[in-house]
Length: 573
Image (cartoon, rainbow, N blue to C red; front, side, top):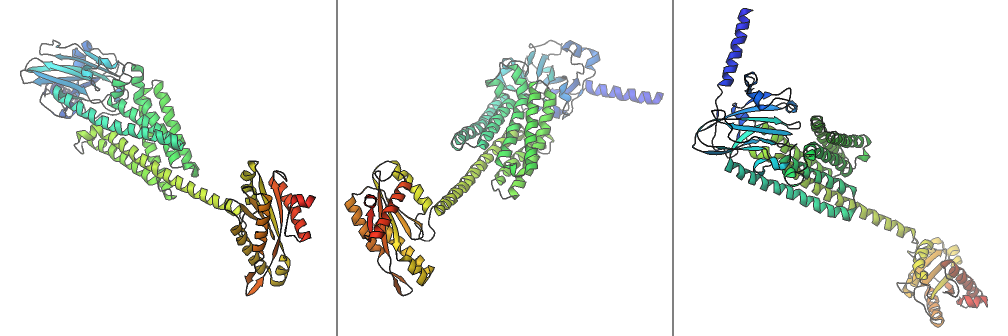
């Protein structure tokens, strides 16, 4: 046991000596900054109580607890404050450097130092973070930084306290100030391009939403808007330009905005893919949206760590569910689903790239900083294309339905034997003609000697005669006049324009002459005549029913007298 205790004590002393003797970080020019975790020279300790002050950290009891910071951090470790000790070595005569955090999702950030070899602080402390107004951030930087203006060569120490309940990881990097400012300008330019794409998509689809009145466009607009605000929040631009004087919302926006993005993403997927045709799938997507809304409420209540964890779970499960839904709907024949699936794949690939950089599988700092917004912009561009494809398909289907409905309506209003209007077609056509109250005339024709043709030669011969009569009637009247077959051997003509009685008589004789022309049927000349009754509006009637009744009485008068035609006034005199 004594030997075991001695070994443990030796290991403890070796570990302490390794920490105490850790080599300082040499300040040098790094165009993309130097990530201090990767050097193995960044020291940290976790403040489990959350109450440690700088003076307490400097005391030997706590100073000896500093350990080398791990390259990555488990999610949830950021719920407690973490102290970082950064020992820097400057070899040049003067230096202007920036110590920066690698995320903006930090509730409270405090920089102390730099301290020279004598322990003297060369600058006042910096206190910033999401819980503080944006004006507390040095250099107007979206990330949290401390500017280190070092007077000469030597060792300098900086202590940093970070608290980030929603931070994916805690980390620091050191930059030459000029390099950092140049990198920030390049980053702003790229961010501006991504924002511009999203704003253009937002405006374009707002216009389309006003035109088509389709709920899917509304959900897309919500998804696009909250994706834009989420990226701006993560990049720090929302705090810089929108709500920098509102710390309460700065903190909550980091978890509430992604939740609302997920909510509208679920609603868009449900509406775009029309998952109501698959009830169980529709219920799952609706549940996804309700969970996202619940996470937003959780974030508003200040439960940031729980909301962040829930957002990650809901986002992961939702992405998988949306992909499965797209595949199912695509297999049902909805072609635009392949565009939706393509957008999901692009976002997945960009996120995968960021993960691979974090795991050091690939070395791509640009992808690490911009991968998420590249994927989001690409996804929403593809979704916009998918929307246009969906609307095009819907409009084609609607046009086909309208055409089919028009064909059905026309068939319902047409006599199948002669191609003339039937009773329904006559009623529809007569309504606007008689509505003006002007003078019109209606002629009702009944064929003479038609029944013997049917009895002697058969119904085929009768049908041939009816078709021939219909063609001759259409030839005698204008395109605006309505020629209809009421059934059997009765025909009706409603004249759109008024004619004096003399011209109506001439027209009736011409019609009778045309009808009497022989009809050739299988080498036989079949002949019929016509008795025509004429009624006029408004004196004889104002409705189609009244005019047909009056013309029918006049037609019987003409048939009894053998005159060929008669006016209703003659029939009643």
